[in-house]
Length: 120
Image 1 (cartoon, helix red, strand yellow):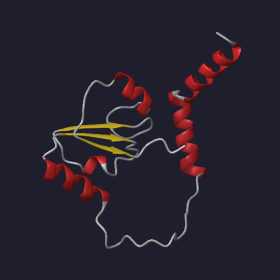
Image 2: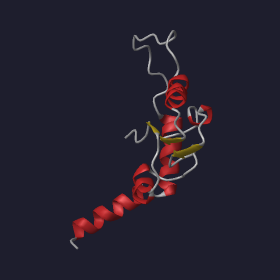
Image 3: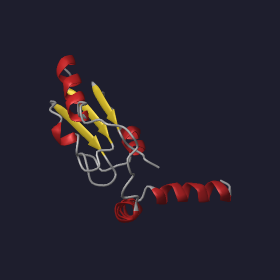
């Protein structure tokens, strides 16, 4: 194994470390952009994502739901489904892993998947 390859693998492992992920979370929470301003879209008369996702689950009679990137469970807690799995490396969901690590070990299939993860 070359030195470059070795260093690259160590950096990737460090980036996935729980301590680094926690530091990253708090850094973005406290120093991230607070006010994005008005971007000119008005969604006040539109359905919420909670309503849309639940409506899809109900209409299709889905029994399993996967959410990637739950963060503070804003959507995850509102979804009603027999089998719910939420993946988030920080605080939300039911599985504390990155989506890459989750998919490396996951053997289950899901009827409905909502992806809102990896904002890098």
